[in-house]
Each structure stands twice: as C-alpha cells, then as structure tokens.
Image (tube, rainbow, N blue to C red):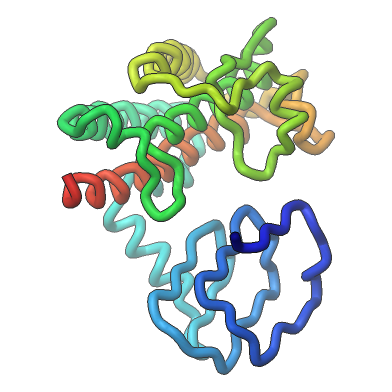
Length: 251
C-alpha cells in the first residue's frame, strides 16, 4: 500500500532528486512556489486554483482560464458577479446547468453514480459536498440558521474528521442520490429565495457568523459567502460533467 502523508509540513522546502515519483498524487495542499524541473513523463495532470502556472517557461495561466471560461461560461458568471442582479443571473445559470446534468445522470444506473472516476468524488459525493457548502456559507453564515448542517454534508478533504463530527456530519453514510437530492433541493430553494431578495446593500453586510469553526476568525461579508456558493456550484458541475462522460463511455 502506498504511503500516505496527512496534515504534515515535512515536505515544506524539500528537494526531491533522482527519485521515482510515478503515480504521486498531491491533493488539498498548499503548493505556492512548487517547481518541477528537468523531469520527464507522460499524463501529467494539474487541477486546482492556481494564480500562475508556467510550463517550460511559458506562462499558460491566462490561456487555461480563458479556455475554461469558453467551455464553461457559467464559471465566469459566478466569478465576476458584482451586483445583486449579477448574483441572480449566475444562480439562474447554475440551476439550469444542474437540471441538465441531473437529467443526464439519471440515464445511468444508480451504482454508477456512486463510482469514483480517477479517485475523484462520485456524483453522489459531489452533491453531498455542495450540500455542505450551502449549509456552511448560506445556512450558517448568511441566514444564521439554528441547525444549519445536514448530516449528509461532505466537507472539503482538508477538514479533520473530528471537526466534521462536531458539525454532526456522518461522513461514512451511504445515501442514495435521491436522499441527497432531497436535502439539496431544499438548500437550492433557500439560495433562490436569498438571491431573489438580494439588494446591493445587503451584499456588503458583515455576517455575524463564520461558515464553521475550522474557518479562520475574520469578517465574512454576504458578497463573499454567496460567491463561494456560486463558484463551488459552477466548478463542481464542471467536474461532474467531466466524470459523467467517463462513466457513460464505460457503461
């Protein structure tokens, strides 16, 4: 079994030289300043939020972002939303995306929707994560609900298991897609109501709560919280569509 390193800083500033790294996976890590120099191989994959990426001395950052926006225009709507009308337009597009994607997913057997593609979250796990994102950034931070976290929520991989347990999350649950979607529909309806009532002034209101205890102690304004939800929805739809294509081809 391959070694696994979790929540460690032992590789900070390290130099790996003349080593066999085939199949190495780096996930949910801070990689600012990462350099891969004079290496060789095939099928090298990078995915994440990179501010600047240089490949063989060519800065490809702008090209990658523009190509992603061309293929998935909703991600640009989510990222660039400024006014209340912009937030409504972005959410309109996201609702349409997920209706189309769910129609596509329903054509596959249920077991396929629990299948991970290349170690990424399954279709069901993706919806569990979006459930958590809505609970944290909307239900808890913006709406200040008394019990915002649904037990089927699935946080980002960097949240420690003990912190997830404190929020009442049952990470080892095995729900059906419909069970997850029942909670998802309620959260999406809350987001619909929120953006429908949203004003430009409300966007700059400072929330009384942060999304969850593991998040840093700082001010969280409505604008930021709702934008996190928009961006999470747009990006994870992109991932879901990518992986559905693989599952469809294998079905």
